[in-house]
Length: 208
Image (cartoon, rainbow, N blue to C red; front, side, top):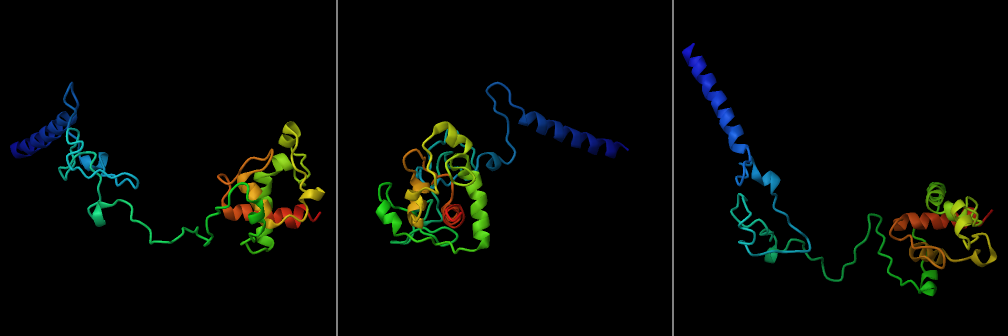
């Protein structure tokens, strides 16, 4: 019985000691359990601090380096982000290249072909995207009579003579960079979705 009580006393004492040691008090910050969980080593892609002593005054890292040291020892020259192969260009998951034509280059845009294959599914998706992003201004039928369009005025009637027969690339360029009263939507709508909207405008809105 005495042995059981003794073991119990040791266990309770150890738990109490652990709780007390973790408690912060005054200038004492307390003891952290698994400090690397709270102070992970960040490998920032655009910054690199090679000085192992940087932030030593703050550090409690297990590797005994300064808190702000973030050079990656596993990459050549301690780089955090590997440099891409020379002359390579990033593509999205569909293999599409970045769209880099300047705002004023409508002539160049007119030569760009729609990379999205036209089919019923693409038209259905284009319709949903048009309703989501375009109908508020251009209206459900593309006549510039959306609720927002009525307020701000000057919204393009996509069925008007000047807008009929425009190349796909021209429409995509305007959606991307904006033109006149229309703001740029390149940062809001991914490129593949912009092309689907173009298909819907050309095949459904302007064909009615």
